[in-house]
Each structure stands twice: as C-alpha cells, then as structure tokens.
Length: 385
Image 1 (cartoon, rainbow, N blue to C red):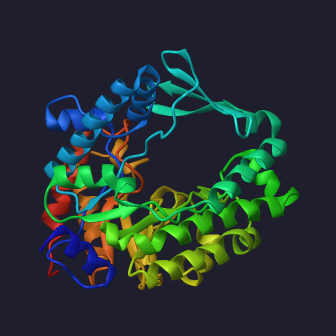
Image 2: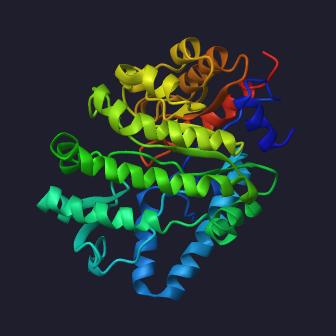
C-alpha cells in the first residue's frame, strides 16, 4: 500500500495496513542528529537562515533553498512520513539587517513594518515589534486594504506555485500524500486584531472575506496539481479556551469555513483544521457544523484528549496523539512507548487516525524521545487490531 493510499483510507475511516504517521516539521538539530549531517528542515533556524541568505543575495538564497528542499525530502524518506508538506518559511526579502539575528521587513504599499529576531536558545524566529503593535487599528486598516486588493486579483495556482513541494516529494520518493495550506482562515492572535473584533468587526470581516475568496479561487485547481489535503485551519485558542468568544467564531469564521470546506469537497479534497489550545467551548461549531474532515494539533495539555474526541466525533479524522509540550519533552523513552501504545489502542480502530505530535518536533524535545515515539508507532500502529 502506498503512503497516499494509506492516508486516503484514514480519511475514509477504513483501516489501512498501518496508521499513517506525519510531523509538520522536525527541527534542524534533531534532524541533523538523526541523519548524521547538517540538515535544514524546520524550526526557527531555517526561517532565520533563509532570511539571512535572502538578504545576502539571490544566489545565496537559491542555494539555501536547494539544500533545504533536499534535506526535507531526505528526512521524509528516512522517517517514512506518509504526507509531504513544506515547512514554515519566510517568503519575503527583509529590507534591513539590524544585527546577525534581527531583520526588519518593510511594506511600502501599506507603510507597515515588522521586526523579527532569532533566539538560538529557544530556536524561535518571531516578531518582536511591528507597526501593528505600535499603531493598532490604523495599521490594520492599511493591511486589510492591501489584502482585499490582492484577493481581487487572485489567480488559480499553477505548477510553478507548487514547484518546491513537488521537489520535496520527488526527493522523498514513493507515492505520498501532498498537502496544501490553502484555506487557512484565522484572526491573528495579537491584541490589535482582537480589539478590532469588537471595535471594528466589519474590518475583520473584510479581511476574512478576502482570505476565503483567495481559497475559493485556488481550490478547484489543486487536484490537478497532485494535492489531496487542505492542511489548514488557523490558531484560535490557548490552554484557557478560545481567544475570542463563540459568538465571534460563529460570526467571523464559521460561515467562511463552511464555504471553503464545501469547495474542497466539490473538488474531491479533504480539509483538516489545525489549532492548538482548548476548543471545547466551540467544539460543535468547529468540528461538526463547519463541515471539516479532520482536526489536528490536538492539544493534550489543554484538555483535548484524542480518545475522547474519537468517541464524541467519530466522523473526524484526527491527527496527533503525543504532547510535544510535556510528554515528548519530559518523559522517558519507556514512558513514551507506553503512551504511544495507549494512543494507538484508543484512536486507531476503524481508521480515521493519523499519528503524530500535538504540533511539531521542536528544539526542546530530546532526539531519543522522538526516535522512541516513531519506533513505537511502527510497532503498535499495524492493522488489523
């Protein structure tokens, strides 16, 4: 059975030969230790390194990307992941280098700016200051206008759009499931955006309408490009619960998410929604009324138990099972093996399950724990059960 067939069966709630296994990203340190050579596969380091290379020159950037695509493909092949995706990267050239770890991005069209900094200890490359944080809603107004203009000019994706994904898949070998992030829908979890939900709801609706429109333009073309899954969603919760109210979810996200999932189904695609956090207050709207096919980044540490979700929402295909915030960081390989066995026993029967971490294999996870997780997944994930 091919990896693609294995994932297709999981979404049809049939039992393949084994439970599919997938990680969105494996950080560079862990990948390097597994492969025995320098790897460029994931985490804040690749975003920082690609940014630095892009600032240096076009040649340096192209060289870095070539290595990155080969490394990600090699790791997928080595670990035999069933799904192929592109790790989180930066897509724009910075306007200025403030120091070796800090870069400034500038958008002349919107007159906004963002400063990113890389922390080597945490392996995080993230925003430390921005026009949105300084100005608030006036900056959002300019950003939303630009997003709306871009949506009005949206064109369906072409083979060139997914050239990097195809390069990774070719390097990985085998017939694996390809995923796309089209259909990503969220309100960015920053104070100015959340304030606008109450003070300027129309502005938020314009932003989300533009995002939904771009997805609706793109989705019909994706099957012809080899895409089988929309691996999208959008973070909307913390461990305490959703970052905005259930009423706001129903107003802002739900109707547009329904449009996207309907278009995905018409195109023969499935849609998996990803978010960390405690989503119980909106669980019926998000997991049932939206029409999504799968749910991932299941946050065990926020009370989202995969076994309970399997019982209550048997129509969904779940991705996850292992906490990357606690279990994979602090437990021993023996304890991890027992946890994997439990997850497989409770979530694998009847299909509808893809095994992985609750988000990603980050820099705080011991390499031995990740390897123990994968070995246990192969040992306990076989069908029939």
